[in-house]
Length: 56
Image: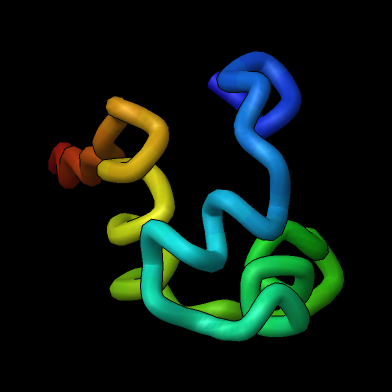
C-alpha cells in the first residue's frame, strides 16, 4: 500500500502522527534516511504494518 493508494494527504498524515508536514514529506521521500519507528507509525495510520523475517 502506498500513501497515494490510501488517498490520505501529507498534511493529514502529519496530523495523525503529530508532526509537521515537512517531517511527513521527508518520511515519504525514499532518498531521506527515516528510521524504522516513524515508518511503522505511518504504516499504522494507513492501516498496514511492516514485518521482518530472518532465515538461515
